[in-house]
Amino acid sequence: MVEATDGKLQDSEGDFHAQLLRAYFDSANDAIFVLCNELKFLSCNRRMEGWLGIDENELTRHNCRRPITDLVGNVETAIVFERAAEKVLEGDAQNFECLLEPDDAPKRWVEINMTRVDIEAGEMVIAVARDITERREQLAKIYYQSTHDALTGLPNRTSLQEFLQAHTDDDSPLAVLAVDVPHFRDVNEALGHSLADEVLKAITAGLRDIARQYRDTRVFRLAGDQFVVVSRGVAAQCWNEIAESVQQWLSTPMEQSGIELTLGSKIGVSLFPSHVNAPGELIQAAEAALHAAKQLATTSIKLYYPDLLASGGERLALLNDLRQAIADKSIDVHLQPIVPLHGQGLVRLEALARWRHPERGMMSPEHFIALAETSGQILELTWQVTECALRKVAPLIIDKRIESVSINLSPYCLLDTGFTEKFADLISQSGIAPSSVMLEITESVAMSERMQKFTVMSLRELGVELSIDDFGTGHSSLSKLRQLPVSELKIDRSFVTHMLNDENDEAIVNATIQLAHSLGLDIVAEGIEDVNVFQRLGEMGCDYAQGRYICDALPLEQLQDWLNNKATSGRVA
Image (tube, rainbow, N blue to C red; front, top):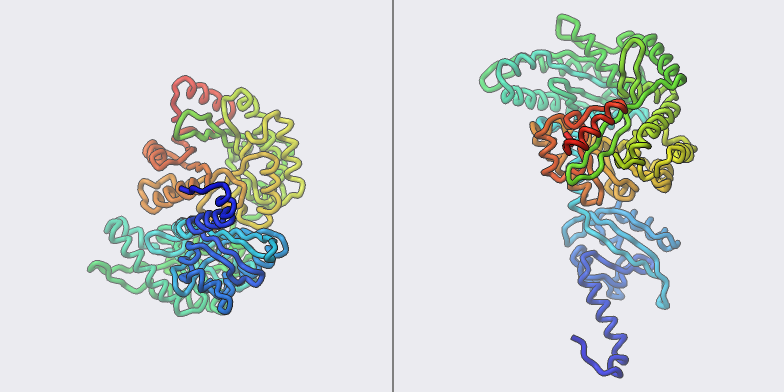
């Protein structure tokens, strides 16, 4: 307790406030430090001393002062500091993440806010740093689990797509070998899952050994007994040699748990840029060649050729039908409930496009959205779906029967410079508030620089809510995720549907829920097909649930019946 006469308190007021400020400075949970314009230390608190393993006196001693860039422990972080400080000294405050690896203290990831101050003593940089190591590790774990096969540790289809995208962009020659092990199914059925898993691990080890013999060659596991070997650069020219090595190895008897097995192989090969120009088409071409190889009686290797893929005439016919359907405004919208897992909040709805094709029947989006995107029709289709969805749900929102509607957006729409203005017009015409609309964008799109700086920000300024769909299937940057104006993450159904039968899936779902909540975001789990998953998600603290167990996507009339039944029974599933 401070006791003093008025005179003494006035005399010591400066000292008192300095001591108070210093006490706060040193007791802060975050690291705080002050730098001169040469990035040398002027002051720091005890937290920063601990992070660097150097006390303040040593850091600020006049003859020994060193810039922070000499102490962070790696060149990349030093460069980040220099660039950030340059902008700060120009008057532009900076927020960034970096890795500290000092010589005398543990490494850690930190988020730093830096700003410039001008006082009588001169120009200074004040920085506040927060330890985000745990969150970075959590996100890295989620990403690894979503991009790698749990059994073999091999990268999965998501990783393959990312790898091919990166290296087709830089025009590197690529060879993709799709490898199938036809007799593995016999092993699985005859000897059981445990032995079959050991066989898959042995196949993985053998393929890795072959890949190590060639530079820039990697192995992926797509599903079951299907593997992919990708060679880049000079190694791509050796595709035939690699394929023959794989074929020979899988044709050689192997012993597993005292049993001799001969597995055999079928291999389909596609080349970039010789055969195709797009990553997705490269995988498709290799799988088409693999399918052709499977038709042959003997163990074989099949190189892709254009006639292996389905006739382009069929695709052209479907494209013309889609163009006509959009022109006729015959694309409909079905609505699927998204229900709160806790409390009695209002139901939300997701709008899902439906196309009743005159010959193929009812078609869901996965059968025609990609076609609309590649043919340049996706923007018009999106306007039609949005207008239809808002027209159907507006009365339900106004009557407070539902909370909001979610609408999926294609990346192609978000490149249109007039998108936000047009979207604002449609919402205004519907008579509902922008906050009653949730726009769902994919994880990979949300992470792009152009998206973050322009369209996403303008949509949020409009007042609509933003959600990242299929979270966990892309590669998120935690720093960007925290800066994006999103309010929700949706866990991809591939992790949710079978999570009670797969410990890795359940771990990913649980970690994603915790991550979302730590960032102040709601979490939605989609793909719920049974009561056990529904209940487990509630126990995990998931906020919202969506899937067939609750309700399928329905036409408006049937959806209204579902809402009436829910209101009567009080049940959501």
